[in-house]
Structure formats: C-alpha cells, structure tokens
Image 1 (cartoon, one colour):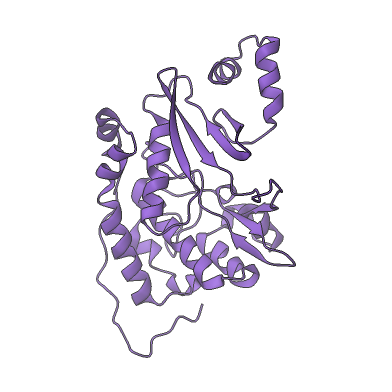
Image 2: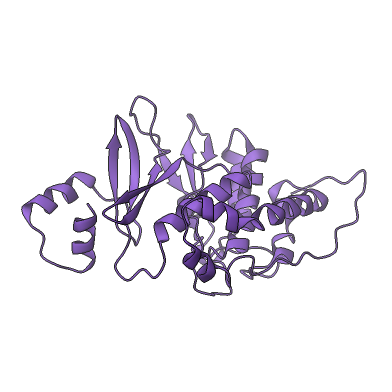
Length: 278
C-alpha cells in the first residue's frame, strides 16, 4: 500500500497488482494518501507518509490524537505501525457498528450549510449551537467543541475547517458530535484558524477563544478554567510526543509552532449567580 500510495502521488504508472489494492479501498477523501484496512473484522484508516515530508507526519498525528485524549477530548483509537522503515498511522473508524454496520455521518459543514450559515462565516460556536439543537447530550458536545478549538490554537492546527468536524447519527433526528479527527500541528506558521474563533474572527488567541463562552454553554469562569486546564496539559506535549514515537529532530521542528499563544487574559469576575445564557 505504501508503494501504491507513492506511485499515485508521483503520478507514476500503476501495475495490475497495485491497481487491485487501490480499487479495494474506495474513496476516503483528504489530501494525503490513505486506505481502509481490515484487521480481524475491525476497520481502520491507514495514513501513509507522503513524498517530500520533512517530518514524520504519521507519528506526529498519532501523538496529537493522544494529546487530545489527555485534554479530555473524545478521540478514536490509533496506533503507529512500522512498515519498511516508515511509520504508518492506523486510526480506528468511528463510523462503524460492532457488527460492521455503518453509522451515518454528516460533516459540520453540511450541518451548518443546512442551517443557512455560509461557509466563510462558519464558527466553532456555530457547531456548538447546532449540537445544542440536535444532540442528545448538548452540554457535553458543546464542551467538546470548545476544547477542540482551544487545543487547535495551542498546537497550531490550522487545518480546522468545518469538514474536519462531524456528527454521527443517533436515530430519529438526533446527531452527536463525532470523535476528533485530522488533528495535528501544521508547521506552517499561519496566523489564523479556518473557523471563526470568537469576537476577533479567526485570530488564534486564547483571549479570542474566551470571548463567546456562553455560546458553548459555559460561563466565563467555566471557560477560563477549561483553558487553564488545557494549557497545563498541552505544556507537557514534548513528553507525550516522545512516548508516542516522535523523534527528537521532529520535536525540535515542532517547538516554534506549539503553544504559540499561551498568554491568558485576567480571569473573569466570578459571581455566585453567574449562568451562561447562550
């Protein structure tokens, strides 16, 4: 599969053996080479290294998924497999039932467009507010969206457009936020997120992330405590990444981008009667 992915990426001729492998995978989407792998009846998405990668992207994404989990963000199981001196990332599919049946998935982009929100105006808070209407667990899903937004700011994941968030069908007209996916540092130094963060638009700052707490069903004090906790967890990213198989070379490459904004504004005034109104 690594050989087939490399051939497609470089637009090289593909023989019948490789063509058979590629036909079996079907379309998955995304910019990087990937395939569906069956392991004893369990479906995994295999993500392969790409030609020209200057860092081990597979190991870095595996580490970022683990870091997300430590931040209290629901994330799928993942594992790193060495194949021919290269790492391949396996991510367990969350859109499959235990018996192999499929769970319907709708991207956040689809949900937001259906609610009349143009793509250029889509915000994290819009996803949270949609969850409030369609999720059986609205408070938990809104909190999960808030945590994702803060984590993406802290680790420089600027590939956070609305297609990289999704909802899983729960029956009737209920949809629950899916586990996080495609979360990793981009190492590009882009000074904006793809989704609107808060009052200051797409600015990737913690102050901006805190500016619309009520839309996530959080009081300002609750949101501030969440950011403090996430900041503390992400500050230990080096150890998490080392334990996840990221090399020292790649950790040095990541250092200029991780925790690019770690400054918190003064904490909000706490009032006993304070409640979020949304």
